[in-house]
Structure formats: structure tokens, C-alpha cells
Image (cartoon, rainbow, N blue to C red; front, side, top):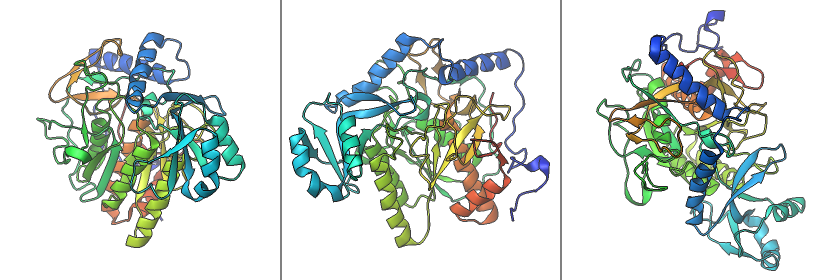
Length: 458
């Protein structure tokens, strides 16, 4: 039986009115509404107003990271018409199949190279085409038809740019920053990991996120903010991890938040990089992990590096005797195409609602989505800097204590992550049992799991 109130009024509101804020009014309300409408338009199914020149430039900057690895950014269509990013000229194959495929790989101009993640080296084989522009989709299909676990090497972008031909969905400045979280006991001591673009190096004058450890060197979790290119402006997804971590802290101010960097400031990281940091977070003792990133796949199959990571995680859990809950953004495709890692059975997938708690047309949906929360015009901590006039039609400058509004399932997922942490401490529950409690109080929405009203939006 759920420990939350059972009255109809409480359905979908596990924490009552705790996170409500005063309604906006006047010019600020109009400004916020316009900014969010632009974000929604760029994410939504009707994107005719998107500036193709800006989108092309964004893709060029995303691709720059992969050219630096001597590979090409690939864009592949899925079975359902969506687009997915791949690391061009790369295949991933289960290590168990390699003895049968070594000759086959040589015949097709494929060389074995290190996977680049110690936890996966003995489990996966990374095959690289001598010509990086080679389309390996047909070869991947051939291997799969022969019973081998194989897939293209996917890139897992942060959710606001999961539609490469859509808009950019840039955050909008919030000129007022006076927001005080509820009881600091919410989530007290729960270990939450955020695998994302990293955290801003500078601490904030208002004290938000100052307890998050900043690491340098090989294990750096610092978001460089201005790297692709280093032109004095914020990169495409700069501050994404800081924004996500701030959402977790709003809902569960007492949580012990650790941020891991797996995707770059252009908003992309390979599935191998994400898998490696996910394993690291679980091994470090995270009780809840937030992944505000994801990708569809060409054959609707699970990306192999991520699937293998969950095998490793299961071994860690069996050895230590307790389970980590992984929460992931469902994606912004606006259809029921599975988005990974959200679509894995053991992952808590989170879609988006409008501020009026209706299904967001741009949110991914399907039987694999577990929860939904407000994802339009959500407010959180941001980073200092100025948006690029090449990427944002009305660029804004963010000061030393910045807050912003952003739209996407990226920003629904961390609300559920925070809600799990709070439920754990309020009722002395494990993370998996806290998920069950929240499911019991959620309002069912077709295709979007159980709706929870946590933080407000616009």
C-alpha cells in the first residue's frame, strides 16, 4: 500500500504543493511564454520555422568533435523515420563472437581497435573501417541475421538536440533567481550521480551546487562551456549538466550529488563513453543515476555498449547486494520509437508534460515510458556566459548567478531522480522501492506512464 495520501486530489502530486511557485505576471510572464514557445516549436513535430542555417551550423560543430577522433559523424535513418547519430565507420561486436569473425572482418576492411573503456575491453570488440566514410549498416544487419550481437557505434546526445534536423532549443534567461528549496532533509544522504556534460568549474555566489565536487585531470568532470569552437560564446549544450544537477537539488536538496562528464559541450558523447561513466558511477556507490541523454537506433535494437554496461552493473549489484536505479530521459522524437538507454527494461524512462500537465507533443512515448513530468519551461541553475549569435536568434548573457528556462525530456528526468531520492528518505526505502511508491501515486497517462507533478513550468 502506498504511504502517500490516497485522495483524488493527491493523485499525481506525491509531494503536495511543496514545489509550487507564484505565477508569473506582466511583462515577465509574456517574455517567458514567448521563450518557451520558441523552444517547444524547435523541438516539436512542426519545425518549419527552424532556421536551417543555424541547424546546419550546429551539426557542423557537433561533427567537429568526431573529426578530431579521425572519425566521421554519421546520421542514419531508423526504421520509423527518425534520425540517429553514429560514429562513422565503426561497429561494435560481442567479444564472444570475435573468434568466428576475425577473418570476416579482415575481408571487409575492418580492423580491431581498443574499445577505450577498461570495463568493456574484454566484453566488446570495436571494429573500425579503414575508410571512415564506409556505411556499415548492411554489415551490421548481416552479422545480426547470423546471430551475432553486433550494432553500429552510436552517439548518445543530450535530449534537447536528439532531433538533428530540428531546432536547438536554447535555454532562456530567468532574470529573477530567488528560489529557495524545501526542507534540506529531502533526499538527505542519498547518493545521486548525474552523467552528463559535467559541472561548471566556478561555484555560484548563491551557494547552489557548491557541494558538488569538481575534479580535474584525467577524471575531470568540468564542463568547459566554450570549446567547440573556443570563440568566446557558450557552446551548443554548455551548462546542460549544471542545469540537470540543479533540478535534482531543487527536488532533493539534501542529496549527495556527483557529476560525471560523458558528453561534450556540443551535446554528444559516444555510447562507449556514456557506458563507461555509468559503470563508474555505479561502482562509486550511486544509489540513483540520472542520464539526460539518449538515442534511437537503426534497427530498434539496444546499443551494444550500453547493453553490455548493464551486464557489468548487474554483476556489481550481485556482489554488493543492492540495486542502483537508473533514470533516463525518454527523448524528444514525438513518437513511440524506442530511445536508449531509456527503453531498457531496467531503466526508469521519463517523458514530458506541458505546464498544464498535458502530454507534450514533442515527447517520446510508448509502453516503455514509466513516468512523465513537466518538461516545458523548467527553471534551473545555469552557467555564466553569452550565447552564440550564430546559434541562437536572440542570444542572452548569463551573469554570475544565472538561472534559466529550458525545455526537453532532459529536464523531466532529473525531477523523477530527485523525487526518488526524497521518497527514499521520507519513508526509509531502497531506491527500487521508492520507484514503486511513486508509481503508486502517479496519474496514468497513455504512452507516458505515470504523471507526476513535481516542479512547475511555463
